[in-house]
Image 1 (cartoon, one colour):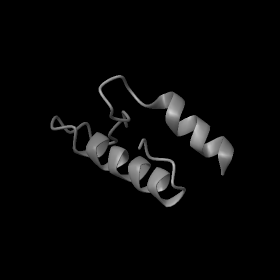
Image 2 (cartoon, one colour; image 1 turned 90 degrees about the vertical axis):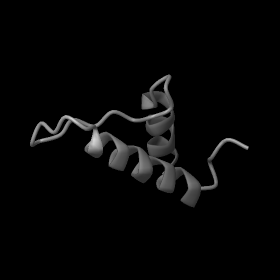
Image 3 (tube, rainbow, N blue to C red; image 1 turned 60 degrees about the horizontal axis):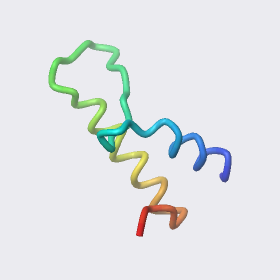
Image 4 (cartoon, one colour; image 1 turned 180 degrees about the vertical axis):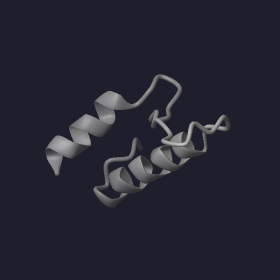
Amino acid sequence: IQKGIRWLKTHQRESGRWFTRSLNRDNKHFISHAGTAMAIMALAACDELPK
């Protein structure tokens, strides 16, 4: 779990999001928004969100 937390924290973009490439090449960044939400939920479940 700690290795996953480190990976999430090091791969977060300066903008605060996590980039996720879409398989269907959508133009609205929907999949990156979903990827960011999943990363935030994972960090929250481990009580690793910034205070």
